[in-house]
Length: 263
Image 1: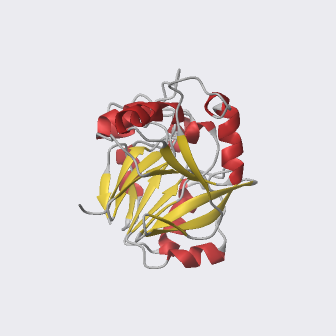
Image 2: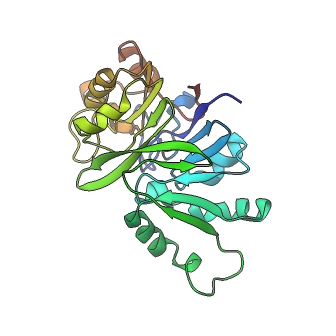
């Protein structure tokens, strides 16, 4: 089977449309503008990897035929990236094994608070079961396949992106050091997040993500984690998938839920 990434969700923490909003993006009838919380499913040399497990995981798994995982790789501990972890109970039951997780120590601390019932000495029958591996910035292997963590900053929170073969997935960042960019040479596919137009305290803006994508120079760069704020209706600035796609320079693309890309 070919190596591929499927974008399970490409929206920011509120998703798109946002509850109660009637802006031009939230009102769009284009299915590419219906964005669940950000997550990705990667097939790599036989591995089935999930990056982040947000609140929409159950729907994402059912929609994309995900019935087993070799591992979940967490980027950080924020709720929109961890809020669906209880739903791996179904995979535990169907496949009769715990779900393998790779994450930093600070992420594990967050999971223990959020899912305290799964970490007790005498857990209730049916709680999710995990096989947790603590990682840091050093490369590690899953079933003999090398994964390279990429350190980035999400405001003041250190987070991880992941280089997997000729793919790199990096979301929720607003700073990437030069030495980390050096690890991203020769990519087929680069995934970067951009939450809105204009400066943001903890995310790359659309303009910053495009500039970084051009600097990294992967064959294809995809923008994810988009919010409805790509549009500024009062200034007649448009922000739907079609509008944004028309703005992108060669090699830069706007991701959408369900998009599958080979690498």
